[in-house]
Length: 629
Image 1: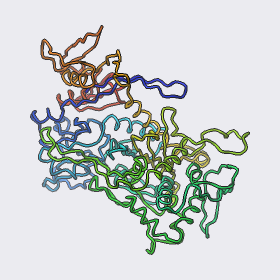
Image 2: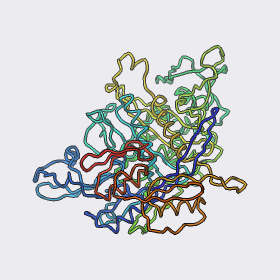
Image 3: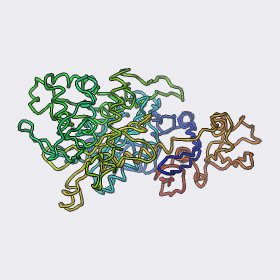
Image 4: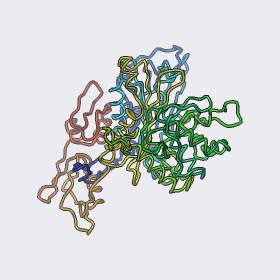
């Protein structure tokens, strides 16, 4: 693959992007794999552009392994003992809990097939050698994995997960699940290690983004306020009492706020309640809106798709909400549902709802699979799907977007201007604030029942003015795992704003920095006198891509056939240098995908560190580790 380099400069708090268009060209990995002799015929997983992600390749270590026969072991035990198939993921362990496993195990002398995740859902195609093209983008997957892992390591957190969705299409561009193992490493690998979280035990390395549901906490306030506006129960002119004490008793039920700011009115608007994540305000709003018709609220939640199972993989779980006139419903249920309790949500349902806000009220079906491919030709397509053209009005979406923007970018409204906080970023999501773009989103910190453990969340979209991506980041905080002293833990407790919001910001900035590019022509049609530098790789693909974007007037005929090489422009002339694609030294300077393709053709197992261009590599037995920057 060829990526044209970008140069990004920040000046006077404004983003000045000087970038050449990024060319993510498919080099025909999947097509080539069809013409080569493969040890196994199981189909591949491809990324959003048709490049190889997961395939079946021989691996000497596994071929030489002698596995015990007639030994009865559970599926989880075999996973824990590393008795894996030779399915190889070019992203290392990133995405393994989504792709799942496919292997043949021997139990009591009998061979038994075992599958999970996408390997299970699309097994009928894969086992016949047919490829599955996903919506996943490998570069975005790597950016997301790196950002989440850095935060987990820095604070010694139990684990976390995220979903990145393309706003207009509903395509899932990245899905990452990471959990800490006994060695202190964070991996996205299916396993049987359990983690006590709250009053429950969870599988640490399960696909939490799709297959676990939790009380989400304050990121659900966005849902509640959207419902009130969409149902016409309240307007933005409504306000409620602001309680400086940060504590209030609602009919024997104590509600607490983490923060309070004096705006001089003694009242909070909806926007204030969102910015300062006021539970007390939310209870007042929801009681005013729905106390005479509680069922209307739960019906609206269902209409919003918050009880839908999208069945992206077979083990995806269905969210849960309490219902009026059932044994689960009590006098506090409606209050609790205003700020994210008495409901159990999945990450995929929440990010899909936020995506609808970002998409002006147009609700998209989440999409993880684009097509079924046979010999490089799609035999079945899964087009984007609109669930509801207008789930709620654009006016409602715009109003909520403004509130979410204030959570991240709003400044202090303290009346006493001598207070050091006056005029400073003051919303709960301020750590997601970016100088490069406007981010809109909501924090959430949900305490787990009967414990000090918490679910730390941030969900939102970017850029807020014209959203391109919607992202949810959720992190598990285990009080006992926290290495800080008890005094420090109690005085400086982690929340969604101090953890997940930071991850969100890093991902948003890196993705937009990679995506934004300067056009090859000015508005008046005059061509820019810059020819983009190109990375090493497949020369034919480079010619096609440069021609398509107007960097070349025509595709030249070469004096000799060159498949792999390096092209440079000097004094307006194009110079091609070919090289031996079998030489590992030549992968330096390549993009990650092309380097991986060449190495896998040599039956090498590839790992990647970082993202971007190959700067260096190391070799240990059959494994090549690419150092990317």
